[in-house]
Length: 278
Image (cartoon, rainbow, N blue to C red; front, side, top):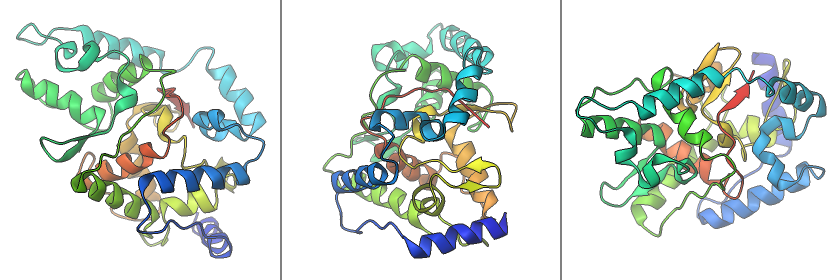
């Protein structure tokens, strides 16, 4: 892994993608789309929602076969049951969300002007539990991944539309997430951008590195490595461990900001979570 990551960094030195620090979110989005259009000219923008399966025919064929009987079906059933089961006070999750919580996942994460914070879907689920005097769920796997996966499933086909409002607090969080995405970290001195922009489409061991746009469309995901479902923040944790960096806390300000930036750059793509990944 160390040698391969070193190769990644060497390539990065040869063709480093950068974003101006003062660029607007709209400018960031346009530059990234143009970069990937040039890097993968045979891939339609709409197909980037499928991650690495949009650029590798063999992997896509295997994935499509698995999707005939997806391993996350049981998780969807569990999530639906949890979503519809009343709390002790008789209310359900539907009471906490617009449109009863169906078909709304594409709007998360969003900036809440009242609290001045970005709210992820998992955070909203636990906020709902707190409002109904229920204990919080753990952030990275188990019931919260099943619930989030079910809610995302009801939003399949809807276009991701994360808003960065003209509010300095929202802009600051977006810029924090952007900075984290491009920052070198850990003993491997690697960034998210090294793997998923500069080295996207290349392999690390047997794994094909995906593009930054289209990565969040399929989370939560079922991973063969995990033998179950996990949230995006669980994946962030694993990535940081791989570069030998002490992970941030799930749903803490760092990963929340990262998710805000990371999801925004997939705007215009359809959500297709939950996903199935290696």
